[in-house]
Length: 251
Ligand SMILES: O=C(O)CCC(=O)C(=O)O
Image 1 (cartoon, rainbow, N blue to C red):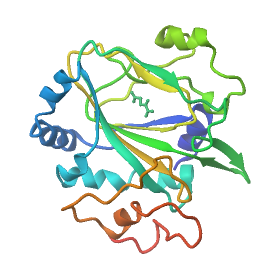
Image 2 (image 1 turned 90 degrees about the vertical axis):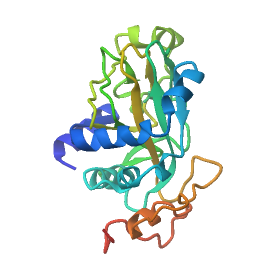
Image 3 (image 1 turned 120 degrees about the vertical axis):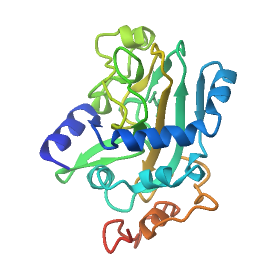
């Protein structure tokens, strides 16, 4: 993680990592999604679908679990030994309405925190959202109140209601191929989807090794071969003697 990335994540509570996937990789992931006939499901769900299960749809999805560009950033954000808590995709069609603002440092939510101690950050549940379509102020998609992972007052109702119309809410530009990393301690939501193209974002949510946000602990997907490091990401939550994700890692 560069000093700039570290500064921006600490300052804002999120970071856009541009061009992690090239156009070919994005096209392949989209092709594999198309094979699943997702379009019909999204239409049936009135233009908004949150759904998991895609790790069995092809190796390119599995490769995202521990992408080499993202892992060093997560090591700083979450500490070594973090685990995959849960994952799902967001599909939005034109006209999909907003998802309300949620999260934020206050009131305190134990599994979703941002602390700074001993000269380093400690985060609870943290999201890596892979964008397979352009998102941003014109199109819609992820929105947030930068810095709210450290805020000391609850988000006022007036700001929740105004949503993206509130001056403090941003819809960051995040093109296809980028990854948006954010702490769930950030106040965030979804801006209405105004683009003609379908929003496709794959959200991988990681917890520090000792905790779980989800009631159930995620199982490795059936019929998928994982590397040693990917398998470690599916370990249940515990702290003592947790294996490093960064030493002698099988590629
Ligand atoms: O990316 C988005 O649209 C928001 C996702 C969200 O609200 C969440 O991960 O809790």
